[in-house]
Amino acid sequence: MTTNRPDWALIDHTDGYAYGETTDGATVAWNPATDTHALFAGAAGTGKTAATAAVAYAALSQGADVAILNAFRGAELTAFAEPYAVGVAQDVASAAALLREVEQEMRRRARALDGTPTASPKPPLIVVMDEYLTFTEQHPVTQRTPAHEQVSRVLADILHLGRTAGVHLLNIAQRPTLGGHASGAPAGIFKTETHRTLFGHGSTVAEKVALREVTDGYPLPRGYGHTVSAQAPTPTPFRYWLGTDDEYAYRLRHRLGRGKQRPVR
Image (cartoon, rainbow, N blue to C red; front, side, top):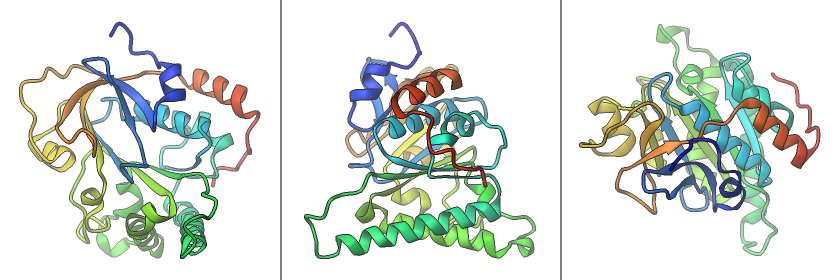
């Protein structure tokens, strides 16, 4: 492997949403058809956002609907994907409103499929939550608002019904926890997800939460991590691709036109 630039041919033709390569040269991708939800974990600067950008680009270019919840205004992920997303939220109140719309769509899809296995499938709906704990936690806990509760409740619903309705979560976190009422996250939020990636060298706790085991013996310089999935349950070292906002934006314009011009909430 001689470069960490995106391999556009693999992004276009891989089953799922490719974002890197293993140290043996195999493609690393999240495929919601086999792994309903995903977790990207790791400290700041380890590559979570770069990999998420590749996933968002791949999903959009393959025709998926993408909703983005990103608490960091002006973040690169929002900048290039916003015109093509079905919605973008940047605070707790707008996240609750956007997720309420996602929940309504999810339940419409589930009702349409009930007893109708031959119904025309809708495109996948990918919900990208950058630093999801910023939308679910509040300290002190007495300052939690109805919006925080709404976000946590809808996340739990998506974890429960997502596979049936084609709605999938990509959760991004610097400090993954097991979830539950103490953190404001729905219980089992990382237990339900199958595709899990830990960027950089995590703590023992982070490795156990993200990978279900502690890795040992792999060098992990900047740009590397470990990933596990339903197809490859043993932690595998990989290197993520690093694309630029301008590259992704140019290619999306070429494929999809000017986009939907959805407002940031």
